[in-house]
Amino acid sequence: MKRKILVTGAGSGLGEGAAIGLSQKGHDVIAAAQTWQQVSALRNKVKDLGLSLKVEKLDLLDKYEVKQATTWDFDILVNNAGIGEGGPISEIPIEIVKNNFEINVFRPLEFTQSIIKKWVRSKIKGKVVFISSMGGLFSPPGFSAYASTKHALEAMAEAMQVELKPYGIQVQTINPGAFLTGFNEAMAANAMRWLDDEVNFTKRKDFQDIVTNLIGNAEGRLDPADMIAKMVEVIPAEEGKFRNVFPSSVEELLKKHQKEMYERVI
Image (cartoon, rainbow, N blue to C red; front, side):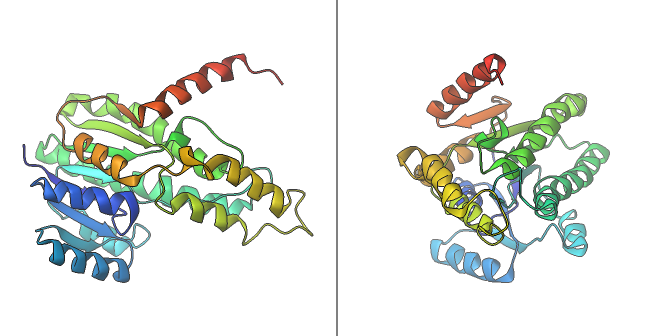
């Protein structure tokens, strides 16, 4: 079935790949990118590929762009836009954590609420897909600020699914593992702009060792093409699981982790 889909944060990485892949499958897709540079680059790519994919600018921090986006025609909203802040949660500056929540949680929620109200008024049986993370189901050292925003998305999506079922609106999460898009590497590098060996008790080398242990191996550098293919499969489907962790090896790892958390002692 042909769907009308908006993908936010489609200027790079998994969002861009999913938008292109969905368009190649024949869906009507709007790829929303944060900056004009991303918009121009993606429009050129779309032209070269011969796709009908629409590329628009949408910065969720710009209230005028957000207002304009609420007028676009789509029945699936893919909340993919987000940033990642790395660093030890015991020392990370609070304003950085607040900004991570603003972009990953508060602004997407505000935008989603406006779209849901429109759908309910118009009796549109739409679908909201939150691009969460494996970090929405566990909180690794050094990445907790970002993981906590994804934990928040998990909580909102869980309740929203029940709340919106009477209106025929579906809600799902997609939880990617550690794919090599550059996002995780950038998140780790972000911490280096404030971590100071003269100020912080967490030393830069110690933090870098944490990063290497988490994403410096094959399990932390998975092929994004596999995740994009999974997103293209899940997003337009009329039936499916509420939570979609991929790959399956990560799903099993997270289930094991959740069990271990019940048994952990201090």
